Amino acid sequence: MHPTENTPGLRFIPLGGVGEIGMNTALYGVDGQWLMVDLGISFADESLPGVDIILPDIGFAERLPELEGLVITHAHEDHYGGVPYLWPRLRCPIWCTPFVAAALERKLDDVPFGREVQINIVEPGHRFRVGAFELSFIHVTHSVPDANALVLHTEYGNVLHTGDWKLDPEPLVGARTPIDQLTELGRDGVLAMLGDSTNALRPGDSGSEAEVRDSLIELVGRQKKRVLLTTFSSNIARIGSMLQAAKATGRIPAIVGRSMLRMLEAAREVGYLEDAPRPIDAREAASLQRDKVLLICTGSQGEPRSALARIAGNSHPFIKLEAGDTAIFSSKIIPGNERKLYDMHNQLVRNGVEVITEEDHFVHVSGHPSRDELERMIRWIRPKILVPVHGEPRHLRAHHELARTLGVPNPIRIDNGDVLMLAPGDARVVDSVPTGRLALDSNRIRGVGDELFRTRRRLMNHGTIMVSLVLDGYGSVLAPPIVADLGAGDHAPQSAGRDVIDAVVAAVEALSDDDAAQDERVKDAVRTAVRQAFVLPRDRRPIIEVQVTRLDNRTLDALEDD
Image 1 (tube, helix red, strand yellow):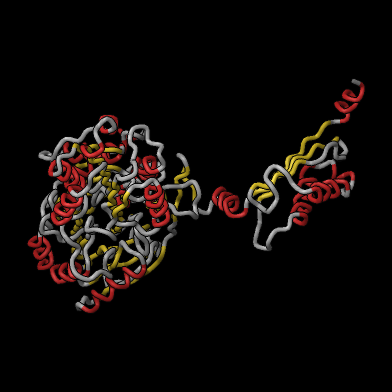
Image 2 (image 1 turned 180 degrees about the vertical axis):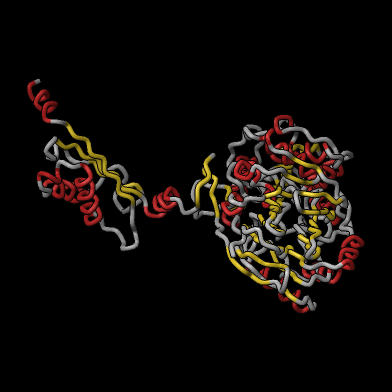
């Protein structure tokens, strides 16, 4: 039975975000009607040279005959960042809360189809309908305002899709997670909970934003020169703390980075941070004394095009960090970003800048629940089925084992693409659908297995050898070939040894007249000769590019007559 068939049942299909951090995208199906929850992105590593953003392959969702809409739980890139790239493939309406809508509208300003997207704004606590689905949001505390858990009210039972959440007694921006609403939902009965697993291995609680604010104020107050603070652009509570740290220490705050400015505008549009000091821009900050400014900057994950990357590389048009200045990273390192961030840290240190991270000082708390919080949520909701999502395999396993320990009747682990039948009957995987990863290369979306990326990896790892030949119409070599070794072997760039050049000439002259007249046959012979002539390790496979220029016999005759 294919999962798209109009058959009774409640199904869950993750297209991303299970077994990985980021790219959260899921489908719910009820009796043949479908709903997408979140459409996130992830970030590329060194395996995809030239690529920053990874998108989920939503080909299965594109083919659904009845996709009623897209519901976004909160405004983090790994939950809504795919909309500006993938919405044209779905063309369905979107439902979200006010801050998410404000942030999303700013993203859509940059794409030509932005005005075509229908965004429906929903207040937490209110029920709303998306096609055949009856839904409600429950506000949860997270590291971004207006984060929500989503409840699906179905004839098969209630389903709680937690999104990202935590329990923070002093979240600073927005309300606390409403425990009374969660316990009431638990009393009403919950068939299944799809739960955030990111910190399932961490004991205790995740900590409070209020404690981080106090720590940042104390830390900034100790610095004598210019101070730069960086965090996620969406962490409005943390940005608010940074603005307050500037006020408390007698500094003027400056926002450096377009994405952070946009998120701050979105927050103020819906009523957040109204009492916080108003920041200046980077141009104004450049003229202030070093001990009078607090720079609040994008680039906490080492993003190559971020403001902080340009500052660290001394290429920002206005902002410079000098010896004795301090850069404070008020964020965690997302898995996969370690190398980029460590390189940035080292670059700053080489310039004499003191670098402070969560390893050195209390400057960050997670927006995800630790084990004690996960335990409380399970006890409040009392689901019959618990499905760990949003985490690497080790996180999913820890969440699964915690649920089993707490007596959840049916904790079940799945992978991206699994079709999980939640009801009727026992929860079980009944099928699978294709999933995968897409790469945003400039403005074009390609599969990560595209030949382009294989070629880039090969160039990066093995180098290239360029051979330029000038032949006559019969295939005779008219001038010594030019052989350039670019990172492939031990030969100097732009030149090669006499033995390599002689091997190329010999290979061409050994061809039959018919083969010598065909460019592709010539190129194949030259590639073979170059591989044999260059002394390369067995595992080194450079790209060998051969350019053949032919001068026809009439041109040669004319040159000789002259």
